[in-house]
Amino acid sequence: MMTSLHQRVTRRDFLSLTGRGVGATAVVVAAGRTRAAAATASPYPDWIPASTKPPKRGGTLTRASQWDPPVLDPRLTQSVGLFQFAGLTSSRLIRYSFPEEASNTNDLTLRPDLAESWQSSTDSRTWTFKLRQGVKWHNVPPLNGRELVAADVKYCFEAYAKEGVQTFNFREIEAMETPDKHTLRVHLHTPNVFFPQAVAESTAVIFPREILEEDGDLKKRHVGTGPFMLKEHTRKVKVVLARNPDYYDKSRPYVDEYVILSTPDYATRVAAFRTGQSDFISLATPSEVDTVRKTNPTAVGQTFKNTLTPFGLALAQDKPPFNDLRVRRAISMAIDRQTQVDTVYEGHGIIGWGIPYIYYQDAMPTPKDFGPWIQYRPAEAKKLLAEAGHPNGFETTIFY
Image 1 (cartoon, rainbow, N blue to C red):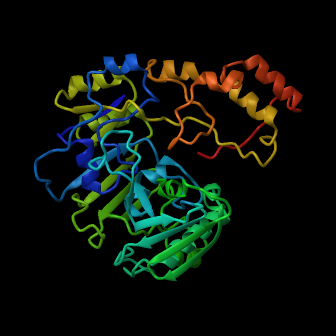
Image 2 (cartoon, helix red, strand yellow):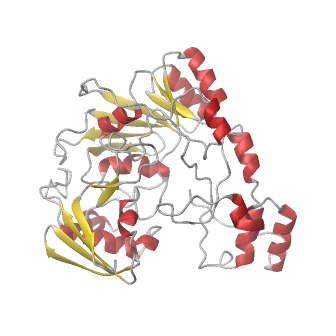
Image 3 (cartoon, rainbow, N blue to C red):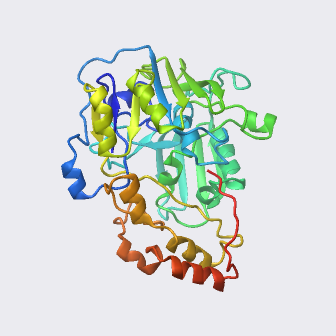
């Protein structure tokens, strides 16, 4: 339900320190969407005002994290392990509000990042983005601090559309043009008023063409235009980010280094926080919070009441066996969602919907909206699998 800090650093402060919100949950973590009863029972606030004290620059912030990046290539994964820091090293075309800009935890206002402004045609099929001038890539080979231009973003979007897990956001692009080096014009196959939201997603980071062309992939080097530079990455050990002195927002970031320790074991993460080796920690339930506060009574806590913990399966519906509707329904009915909430989060949450909806626009659906397929019915699931030609189930590979 919450996370804690040894020092009185609020969530807003932390995001100001780092200069980004991606993967940077400072004082709170969420366990699904909290029931109203559970929310009122929480002794921890869900919104902490920004500190009025002037920020202090320098130092190192350390986090013991349960996630480790499987690869560094943003085309190939949407793993939290990568994007807990990729949004700090890379920029997006536009972004969502930083906490100090937001009015509440549900604020989805779009803000400038690499693009200073954007507008659509009357039919929402053409979007024009005016880029910020003077943005520099990190001053490391092969970029060596050159200016980011519209052709870079165009190349990146084309690469996303060509292959990988983000093609669904970029294959709707029919054509792109760069009238000048700071203007990108995107033409879509069909009207889409939500295209800015698609390119504002935390996974839509802009990467350099030089590395992809030289290496053939983005698995070994990670260079961007963000407030931090990747200083060190040791698989399953740690990630070290160093402050980017050439970041376009000269006021950020405040800290010199951000260290992410790969710590998959829960007890080890708690021990790291208790002993000061980790500056903050994410905890799932009130009982976990209470246990930690016994040894760290001055820790600051905050509750996330309206966030999502996405335990789910993204099925490749264009390939067997998942292109069979019966298989997809069987998988859905084989998942006991309520038991997950009750066991993992002590009942402080509601089950996820599991079916896409336009969260910028529509009301959040309820389990009743999805009929029987979201209910836990293992016998019916087995029957559907048998009808689909899999009476003994089947094996598949899950990429996390």
